Image (cartoon, rainbow, N blue to C red; front, side, top):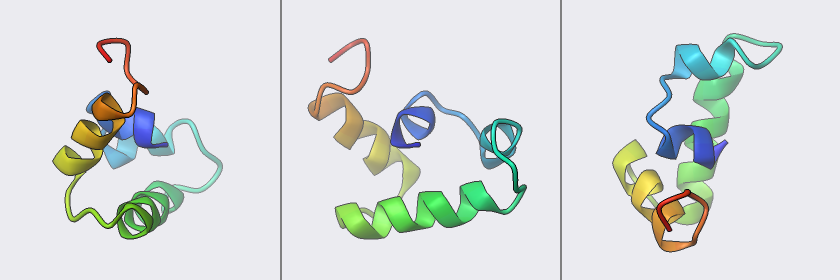
Length: 56
């Protein structure tokens, strides 16, 4: 999921790939909390630093 965030996908775009429309919001919030991050931008930067994106 963090890779989808790092790719700039919106919650709606992520929801189109999941069973529940509200799931992406909850998942993104949980990921941010577990990583100690406060924004999608920070999540994208984290993914880049950790080699999860093609540019890493």
